[in-house]
Length: 462
Ligand code: JFZ
Image 1 (spheres, rainbow, N blue to C red):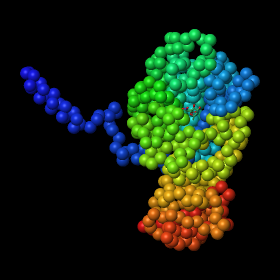
Image 2 (image 1 turned 180 degrees about the horizontal axis):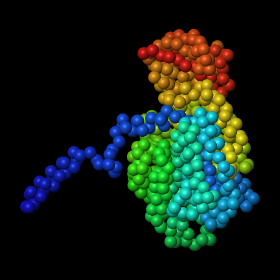
Image 3 (image 1 turned 90 degrees about the vertical axis):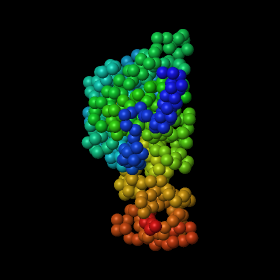
Image 4 (image 1 turned 135 degrees about the horizontal axis):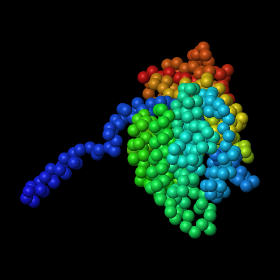
């Protein structure tokens, strides 16, 4: 072939290539319609229960008699404990009682949660399933497959199943100590001259991929994979994330994953504006509620109930039931999900202060759940007296500050008020409501006032 023909061929090839869409890594690219169908249950759920439970639960926030603050599921790191010492000390303390998982599932249901995310492996590296890849797992420590017990119990209660998986692993001998931007207990040991000698990250990543494959291939359909977490230096490529996510999707085509294989929540903020569905289905603001929500981004705010994810025997700084209920409302009004944490004891018992608060939230949800589940963000603009959620043709007026004249103003953008009633009123006796220059006013009934958040439904005609 002469060079002119070669050039012509090359040119034709270039034109053709630029006309083709970029081929996705997976065999079939998901359309936005298919994505919406896959995300449907999650977008409607609005409330989930997070469970942090592992060997750290047995330390209860104390190491060598010294109490630690903060998230004490990190106690191995806080106290700079080498993996073998940690495993030996924690092993005898980890004694799950029979039926613990059924109690978790029942509590999640009673609280009004639609899904539960539990730590299958936290940073300490201990696997709650029967892993063939390591003897640092539930089967070797307890003779049981705790993952299976938890998944079975959640499904029996009709809950969606979410699996938290830490890509950070302080037990595996190939997980780097330094220069990842991620924590490691041996960083507290400057006397170890070269702690990274002999550690090969790619070997850990191979191991981690195979662990993930065990989880996603053995226990039937899973609903959420909650990765945790990455840094600027160590993310995406470091974990071979596209391959890992494709592996998960091969076994679990409908699973929903967060974006923490690429994202460090507290360092980079909430990812507003740079959200990319190729890097995860939703983003995870931690310990705060985004001021105005996030337009066109699926998000879930995760929060502790006191100051720690894992159980502490000396942190009594519990959020009130009112805060839980108002956070639930606030987050739903901004279009997000609320994932509330419980840290059980090493035997699986959920502490009474948590049970009491979750029951109180659940009692409120029982009456007002229709104003949370299946709703979308406030479509009309903020109001001084509380928050608003929406369903087609209907607004839910959540009143935090009950007006002295019992009347709330709703800034309708279009349409006119049809009828209104208090959600707690089973008879649905109509409330006085009227169209005004601002939109509508609704007269509330004090007999149906709720100390946490009162709710009225308002039907709006186009
Ligand atoms: C992570 C975990 O470290 C924590 O133990 C808990 O599981 C929580 C839900 O997720 O928390 C983080 C994640 C990232 C940062 C800090 C805490 N960060 O980027 O600094």
